[in-house]
Image (cartoon, rainbow, N blue to C red):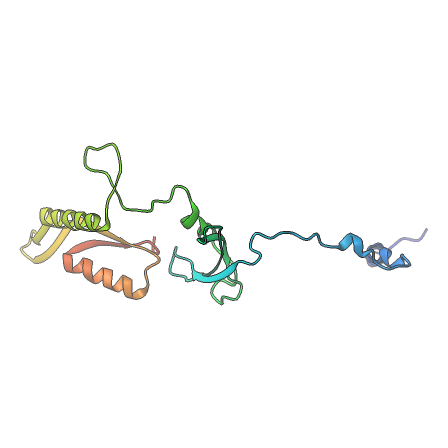
Length: 198
């Protein structure tokens, strides 16, 4: 038996693999399509309405497709959320946070109203938005009043508060971030941070 070169061995291997792949063609009827027939499935999103949206988690702007269907009572029910393959931003892909966007709407742990726990209390109570905004404004004013510094140790006028910090969200648009920064600077806040920078 003659020695095979490496090239000849590769050619024989490729020819053998090709012959194996083409073996079904040797059947006088050709391919047996019954083996390849797809089983029909009752898809969950069959007949659902497609709603295009944007992921709420960061400022990248990944596009989402939400599938909704009306239930027996006529209320829209969210069935599925996935990335939009036609979007030039994410081309259908989603990060781990974006892939869980459906939980924002369907989680049993989702808080649907403002919750407040009074100082010293062991339980949370539902409150109105007016109550919460008033409480937030009162606490912000109290913190600012208690920690306001008009002059530093050298007598320079600084007009700042060191008892309040602000962290911007990554879902802020440029305009929202600019407005929030201006508002915090107006209050004298010097400790500013941004989620996207961390």
